[in-house]
Image 1 (tube, rainbow, N blue to C red):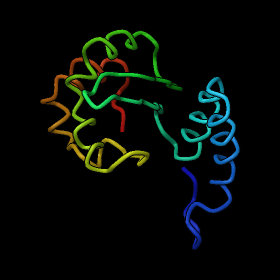
Image 2: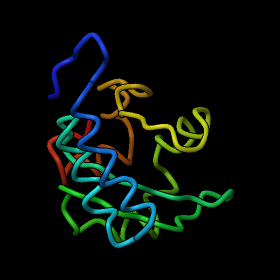
Image 3: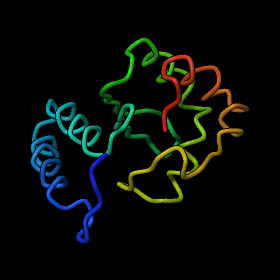
Length: 125
């Protein structure tokens, strides 16, 4: 995890900006940008998802997550993902972590976490 300084995450954020700007100009660079975010914030995996107004999945990129669930996510699990209603309340472009909207007990009761994500990761937080 990046240490907190009086000016926030400070210099470590600069390591994220260049890859993000590069990805904005070249879609093939999203993997690099997401990798930088994942390293900076000590994630267990990072995704970038773009959903249409009807919640259909239009774009998906991931780093440090198993590839075996991408098709299942795109065809079904995105429709039962409890993250999406929460993310809509934040507005476009806002990052979020699972712990911001669901408890461990809620994850245990969720089809998305218990049946889909849990087996692929220990837990994604």
